[in-house]
Length: 399
Ligand SMILES: Cc1ncc(COP(=O)(O)O)c(C=O)c1O
Image (cartoon, rainbow, N blue to C red):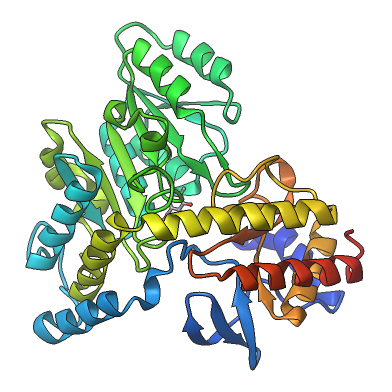
């Protein structure tokens, strides 16, 4: 009998080699208590959180929490059913209305996660015989959606406008085309040149889907994302987003102005064949989205944090994922996994949590320490973080 687990042997070996160096396992940290959007207790010690996607700090917003508690009392713990059957409650319609209002779009469809939103929308709209042209650094949920839908999948070099156009030029006459882009690419924290890319995509008659998971709430004058910031939101056919980042809870969505959009509720398998989100979750999301609309001051403070941290780390000599701060994510490039894990642990000992990212999640085989800032980080905390990086970087031999 072939052991079906034998394909994992190289990963098992890599993991045990890493742990044999005595480093703490970077992938099994426990948050023993969460004190605020920016502080938790890990290994019995208060730790600054610089590796969450809680960009706008909504997880502890009192109005958000009150709405969740009320919904728990009024509607119970879960729906136990699909959105198409018994799983659509008033709260699901309310959060979809909040999304339509937030994006100023006609339709919104809420999924149980952002992963399922990409899986569902991409696989349903682009099927056999259609073409998907996508950035090679796309999120796993985008790739999985492509695979599930059976379309011809044609990747192009990351953020390369000419490479994208070259692929579009080769699509057979008359074939349906979906161009899939992200606003912010979460590994390096860089943004896409959406204005140029979308203009070209439209020239070739393509529909455009933009995943704005890491920009919602923060980027753009109204927090609608990079497409809004670059003035092309009205040309995007589908915006994909998540509640697991700026919104501060869990869930995913697609918003669109397509006149036939509502039919997707009957044909999109990751929407139909799974239970809907609990009432408390959609209630928290609806209140959070409403408050994000009014989040201009928080957005300004978060930009300030991003600029300060980027400049501070750059001045210390760290190699960063972007030349200038482009989002709330600042990636610090490590020489290899072993030294990356060492640096990660040194930061944890300082009382700072960041995300260690490694292939296949990262591009070009890189090991990254991904820092994601929150609007609730104070200016003082950001200075403390820079000091922690300096000490840990010297200890781990990175700077
Ligand atoms: C670009 C992108 N899209 C989609 C998702 C999936 O979001 P969710 O956590 O809601 O499944 C993520 C999550 O990390 C992401 O980075």
